Every structure is written in structure tokens, then in C-alpha cells.
Image (cartoon, rainbow, N blue to C red; front, top):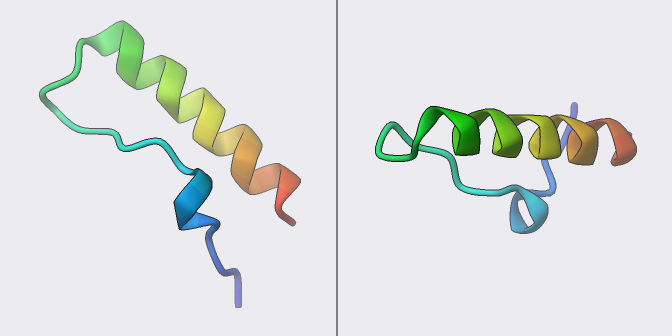
Length: 36
């Protein structure tokens, strides 16, 4: 079972501009991959 490093994930929501959402998505993806 994968436990997400919630403390290291950036909050992402519909109120953010598209560019920022994409940037955070990429950051979160890298964080999750690095965590295992």
C-alpha cells in the first residue's frame, strides 16, 4: 500500500490558474515517484 507524503505534496485546486496547476502536478508527481 502506497502511503502518500501528504506533507510534501502541494495543494492543487480549481481556483488556481492552469499553469500553476500543471506546475504543481509535475512537482507532486516527482515527489510521489521519489517517495517510492
